[in-house]
Image (cartoon, rainbow, N blue to C red; front, side, top):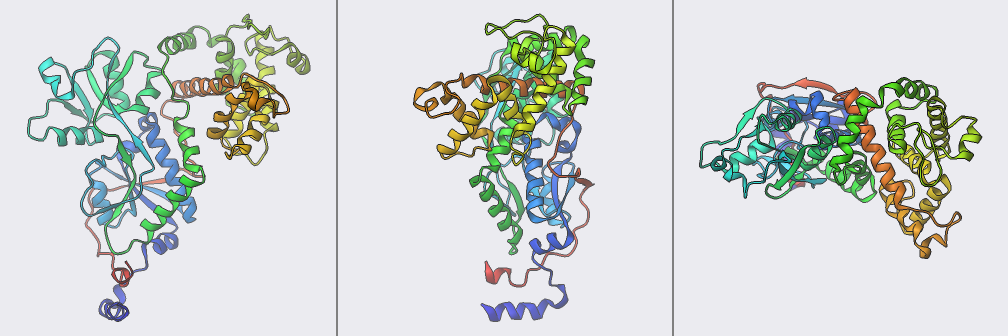
Length: 476
């Protein structure tokens, strides 16, 4: 085997290139092929796309390099970008992986996503997608999408009965919501996120088996970068970082509440305007996002300054008498209530241990705003006692409900609490906050990388010389 490797080295001489992993590190850039549609502002409505971009940022950081995206016109061209050696790996969050392509090597999956048929509430689900033509229903999907690829694969022996358009999923959901089309197909998480401001949308019939999201590499003897990606994905899966990412992007997308969402959208225009500048001023003073502060106010009082709870807390931010007294504010005055709530939230965030990163610091502060910091500290201690991570919200929120169980709260310092309430509270505030961000800053996305990745277009450039790994075959 060694003799063969040495012979090959002599044969190719100066054409030898380093392992791809070493080349990426020497270059200082990880090049990732992504469809152009994943890099548009509207892609920010797809939670899976945001999650994968954060995941790629973590992988680039793991390698000690910067992240760059190679934008391809369609998912099918990702393979060409790899073959042309202008990309090192292809991301698959919005690329169909139901039928794995020859010539590609796929990593372990990091998440499954389910495609569903989307309709308005007043429409019915067909027995299956193939029945739509007989029912005279109009189906639209984005061109070059996993959905169009799946339809073509399933109905390859008949003429397309659906319409493919060059528009993102978010636009198509809006067109279905308006009644211009009867159905579209989207991932369930994307539907859940968009339902909050298009409440009449309904996720219906599940289509086939869930897609397994993974990364793809060119199938070649050099598997150095592929193996590093496998190791990385395995590591973050076992140490909780992957769960934390999924929680960050998808954790608040629980059961959809049509009435609450419709009411919230109505109150955004009818109740929020008089208080918006108050939220903005208080947030700026205390280094907060005003939309987060407004989301708390909505969860607490529906932006009603005269609101009173069954426990006696009052005002727009629902401060207790003791808290309002400590803060020196009149809780029935909306501006003072907002200022007091902002100052109280900032104090809670600052009291969360510094080694807990955002956004978990803020989520713990939100839970403390609802149930008290002491009970949240109890939940963190119980989380560690149960073998969980006391710094991970996905573990803490599983423990908080135990604070109402005497078997557990008798072991705590602060005693019994309604532990399910802060879990629901944080989820709702996150949901309202996300909605306000989408309304006021449409399409905004956040990538964990310190700088936004550069984007380079690829339209099928001529392939350079092949990558030659003189010892790859001998090793693998």
